[in-house]
Image 1: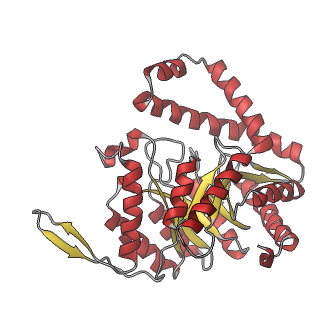
Image 2: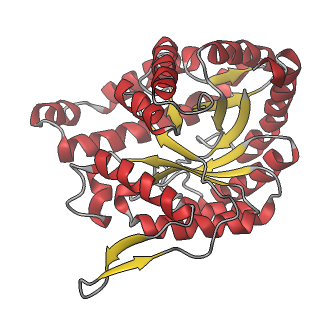
Image 3: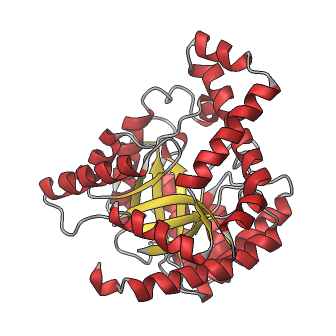
Length: 355
């Protein structure tokens, strides 16, 4: 099982957020981590310092030499696939062939100001964009209308270093999306928000079955985004992360509430609007306690080994460790040493040849 770093900051101090991104990337590069992932988010404090993963990916390429540089994710229906291929080919060249993209369909209607009218067909558009970017990456041409409506055949430049683009399909947990990734022969990026570990295990099995049924070589790759902070003692870690992670959850709750207000049922939107501050805090406190116990990589290195064992048994191939959820940046960087220790302990416990 591989270990990468994932960023999705709810950062008020943007500069500190970017400093943590680059320092964390340097650490990952020096210490044998698999990848650094950055997302695409718009118009909200929750993740909003990352509107374009190609830009942050280029910055990571400039300060690293080994670690893979991945979008987690590109919201493909917001963009022209030709532009995605161009931008990420630049990242691939700057990094010497380390780029990879997770494709996401998007979920917040407010983001679709970039692409009005595509919200309802976003899942179909996402798969179509994924396939077109792969073709362009391989050097194939596509025929598209120019500015006056005439068909033109284009190939993208610059040509990438990698002959084949590493591709993930991002899923929030639907069984159908896991099976779709298997049929397409692409990797999976998922998370534990709203999913149980037992659910993940069943969905990974369905992914592998669809992969094999479609006749693809190998078995695919499942990357799991997981909130992460390691210290010397689990109880101490819980107190360190309690308030920042609770605020992080509160920010995500606000984003969900806005999304429901745009596209959800009137009754659901009314129920959310009726919640008092005390109601919200109660829900967040309950969510924190549950999440800390079951859905995060929190505690000591020894605790981490146990968590890794459960995730490996569920079929996870890579932990994409989300580190920038509000804990002080210096503490996060100090904690990376323990995450590096966990990676080393895990590799000694489960040699790569065993997988």
